[in-house]
Amino acid sequence: MKHVIIGNGPTGLVAAETLRRLQPDAEIALIGDEKEPPYSRMAIPYFLHGNIGEAGTHLRKAHDHYAKQRIHLIEGRVAKVDPAAKQIEFDGGEKLAYDKLLIATGSRPIMPPVPGIDLPNVHTCWTIEDARAIAAKAKPGSRVLQLGAGFIGCIIMESLAARGTKLTVVEMGDRMVPRMMTAKAGAMIKAWVEAKGVAVHCNAAITAVTQKDGALSVKLSTGGELAADLVICAAGVRPNIEFLQGSGIAMGRGISVDNTMRTSIADIYAAGDVTEAPGFHTGRPELNAIQPNAADQARVAAHNMAGGAAESGGSLAINVLDTLGMISTSFGQWQGVPANEGGSGVECVDAARHCYLSLQFQGDILIGATSIGWTAHVGALRGLVQTRAPLGEWKARLLADPTQFMAAYLATAQKAA
Image (cartoon, rainbow, N blue to C red; front, side, top):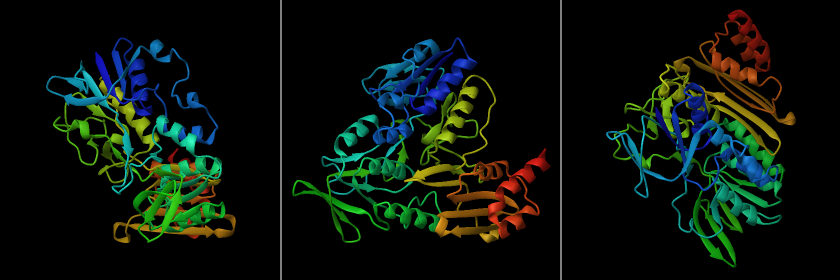
C-alpha cells in the first residue's frame, strides 16, 4: 500500500504517524513545499517572542525520527492531482503514484487587495521565513502596524508587544477576536490591550500603503493615516485548494468531506484547515481552522486509509487565547441560536475583576460558551458542550448563576454514569 500525504504540517504528520502504526509495511510519503523540517505554525509566535529557537518549532525534535518511522519526506509543490491515473504532479513535471491520497495542505494568509500591500516591510506572519524577517525588523521602539485582531492576530500581537515595539492594531470587525468572542467580551479584550499600551482601531480597514519619509504610510478607511516601520497582515486565512481545479474533487470554500474524511473521489481523503467538514452541532459543511479538529480529522482519515471505519464527531469550535495576560476561551456555538430555534442564553460580567461568562443553550443543552478570566475548571464548559448532556433542572440554575457550570458538569457526568 502506498500512501501519499500532501502537506507536512501537524495534520499531515499525525496522519503519517497513525498510518505507520496501523500499517507497518506501507509506503508513506509526506510532501511539504518549504525548505524546512515539518514544523508548527502555532509555534511561530513563541519563536518571535524569544521563548524558543527555530528548532523549537519543529514538530519532531529527533533528527532521525522520520527515518526511523520510514516516512519519506519530499520537498516540492504539488501542481495537479489526477484521480484517473491515481497520481500527483509536481510543478516541475515530476509525477508520483498513490494508492491512497490525503490532502492536508492547510490554509494561507489573506492579503487585502489594496495598493502598496506588496511593498518591502509589509509581511504576513505565516511561515518560518516570515518570522525570520519580522524578527530582524521588529526591534524595541519600532513602529509596527498589524492588520487583524482575530485569534492568530492576537497571538502575533503578544509576541510583538514582548519585543518592545510600538504597536497599533487595525481590525475590520466591530471588536477584537470577532469570530471567537461576543461583543462584550471583545470589547473587554480591547480595553485590556489598550491599557497595556497597544493602540486598537476597530471598524477600520487599510486602504493603501505608501512609502513616505523613509517609512511606510498606511491609510485607513476611517480617514486616518499612520506611520509604520513594519506592517504585518494577519487578516485571516483561506484553504489551499487552487491546485485541485480540474481534479473533479468536490469543493466549496474548502474540500468537501464527510465524517470519514473522504472526498467525492474514491481513495482521496482530506483533513485539517483545507476541509469543509460537517459541523458538530449543525451537520452542515463548515470551515474550522482549529488545530484540535485538524488532529482529530488526521487520525480519522488515517484509520480509513488503512481500511478502518472511523468517523469524526464533527467540526467543533475550541479556542483558548492568552492576550497580553488575559485568558479567554470559546467553545461550540458561542454566539447562540435564535429563540425560535430553542435558543436562550445568559451573560455574567465582572468588569472590575476582568471576568466575563456567556452560556448559550438550545433547549436544555449547553451548545456554546465564552469566558474571560476563568482558568479554573474551564474545561468543564467544553465538556458540557461536547457531551451534549441534557441539563434538566440545571439549566435554570445556570441561567440564574452561570458560574455554577462546574457543579452542573459534575452533576450531569454523575447522572450519565
